[in-house]
Length: 122
Image (cartoon, rainbow, N blue to C red; front, side):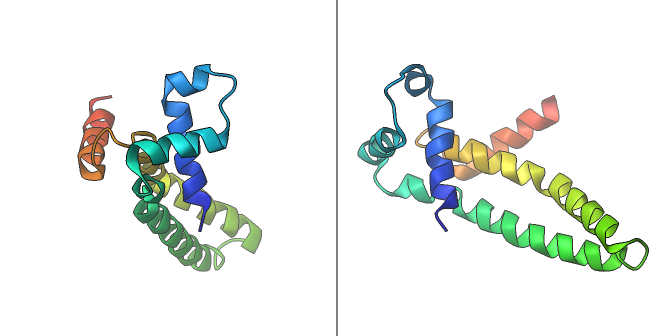
């Protein structure tokens, strides 16, 4: 339940050069900085993508695994199912990380649209 909050701190820390350049910055410094600028709301940024990724990942994995284990050894089926699930859901992970790193810069939907435009142009 707290994993995405620590991701918020990590992604914010890595996305802001002023914080990265200082050697005296600690996680609690970043937490205080986020809280003083935006309150508690940013710590919940990325909840929807995180829950979506977790639930979709498990659903995809188990669905694929059940089908693949009929054709292959269960260990091979598990590796294939997880690989496919990760490849399908990787774009959501990218969007979630971008959203968490850009706290206070733009809203989630605007970021989502910009990310899709960027990925199609490259």
